Image (cartoon, rainbow, N blue to C red; front, top):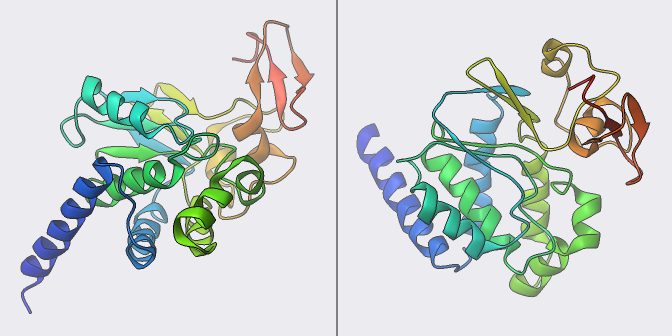
Length: 229
């Protein structure tokens, strides 16, 4: 069978799925599973400090607000016409976490060099069982299979990005346990977000007006001042 034809057919199916998702219509459970398998193959090859080229549009938390995501694409331009870097927290709180994260993963599979999706503290099994994504999956699919498929995939999301070797991007903040980017590159990120330690800090820490390190009021990570930033 012609390999180019297979690739073309695969992209055609993916384009149809992206078009469906852009209408805020979820994929079937089997389609989600197949999509996440493809995404895993791509994400496995990415670094804990993923290089990103400029120009790039950098976006923060989406939290299931699908229509906000659609507005971001309307203003910033569609992928792949615009390069995007999303810095985590795609699910929970909003009503459309399923459609939001599925669309971003589909775009990652279709245009892997044009979009980077980092892990946030809500890309976690424990957190999503409390803040809505788990319940949304049960409501929309009748079981927890899609939730499990996505939370397994979240383990492979890069932790940080480095734009043009100059701009360090991540969901949370710094860690007193991390001195160099090579420290981050050497992490085994394929795991549930730990309750403490440097990987936890990258996803939970927050900047603060005070100098030095502080204990985070959120119960995970640290606060850090300008001196360390």
